[in-house]
Length: 365
Image 1: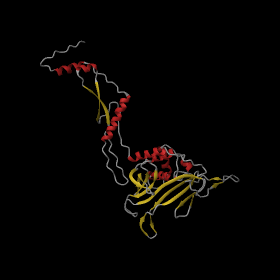
Image 2: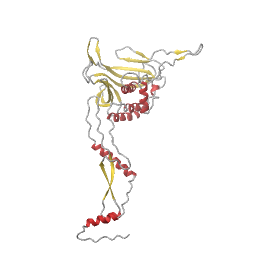
Image 3: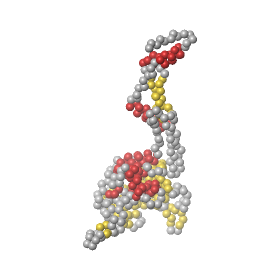
Image 4: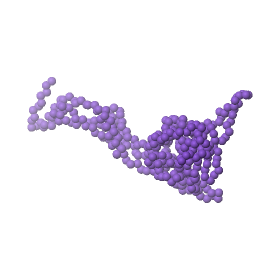
């Protein structure tokens, strides 16, 4: 089919003729974006969303405000209307990063969602823990932990609750749990740990006695070094195991899990991958927040993750640079018998962990 352009007349503007001739041309083809270009565009969308995301308001003690969810964005391909000569050669493609509530034609959405601050911090702590040295503890050795601790209490005469100066605490735990451990605290007599005699069962006359199955074995709440080393390194599976083994022990399930993880961090010596999984599992517990400044029992200042339950906030304190676990602190969040909100009820600082050959033995150095 031959198309003869109409001659321009004074009554017929040039723009009208241009539009009429453009309509006679076939539509330009739409070139596909190269995979590298598409990835770059998606990253640009996420960066733009992060810049425009409104700053979140900060909460009070034990609360971290979350940033508002940013608007959903998509990259949109638009065609710039070409001049007549350019329309014959091909279309010019422009990409416009625009905010829209419309669904993309292919059903894909690009979302930038704020990760909770506590989860981000625990991820960094987990990465640092995963790079740590694996503890070399033989089955016949003891795990030694030295710390400083202080717990608030009342005097015999009553009165207000006070926090005494921190004192040294040393504990020796058999790696395989087969022998009694030892607890030594300054100003107190030594205490033997796990010295209950085993219960034996005789199946029939003359049979060799065997340990009774009713005895409680190692668990999350009664750990041995050997047991801790076998814990799952998948944080989801680990958290589920912790929830199962702390069921029925008071408080709410989330606080029970948080407390159990804190105890494992404080007085066990887990392999690096297990340690990392413990931190990541804690990041999946609802209600975990960040405390920007906290001091352990040795006076070391750091950043903490925390969880509040029943008027008390438990804080795990980490070094700001190395992300090493420093210790714990418990603070009241409500005024009560213990005093005003913010009263420190307990504090600890982990100073050393080592493997020794017998209970009561100090590690070298």
